[in-house]
Image (tube, rainbow, N blue to C red; front, top):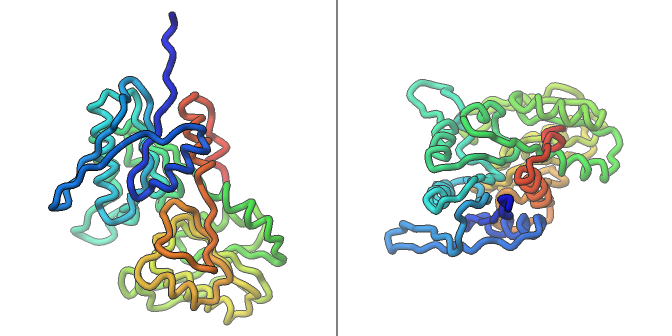
Length: 313
């Protein structure tokens, strides 16, 4: 009798549990049973409460700080390896610690490379993630990495707005490639913001390269943290004659006074995914779910079919 490959099992890390439930529902499966035991000092231990021997498992969890989210993913991968799972895929909608992807000054770590090695050492056999902060992070892994683009969610939404005189904007020089990809898909113009930082998360100066007068501008970025860049860019563009300014950012970190900045800014709308759960609601923030995207890719991975279409802008 030929060996039948068992259906995969899907598990969620605690901070991504809501997204994991959506992904499992979209996949057409029940979320697996895992419990976390906690000690009084903060140490915790995950435990799979069902057999995973010989199966492919998907562990869903974004690894944004605190570091507990990353540690949770690592411990679940290690537990799965020791429970004889056949394939262990880390599904990381947001790959945290990715801003430290190079040495930009002496005596600093390359945290993204370290995280990649930790995931592999724990036992991950595949990584599925979305909109990495830097494309080269894929090269830090020796295991396969499926790097999905949230543009498959954002582009249909932008087209549904039917904006006249649409212009795509990058909030910094580093995001120009992403902005040009969106502008090509939408057949629109591109402008770029040039910014100088006094220190991390503090902008000392910003200039605009390009014309936004009488344009509906959409800022494109991979993440929004303090929202300082987006707020400042939106204010600058309205000053230069833009009709409206929106922003699409895949990962809504939104730390510190970010929600207040968004509310007070000239942004008409901030469009994000649910790769990271929002800490609070805002009338200006529109959330597009990435659950169907990940569920589709997970299904294709398990059945060994192409996912090339998910890499395209």
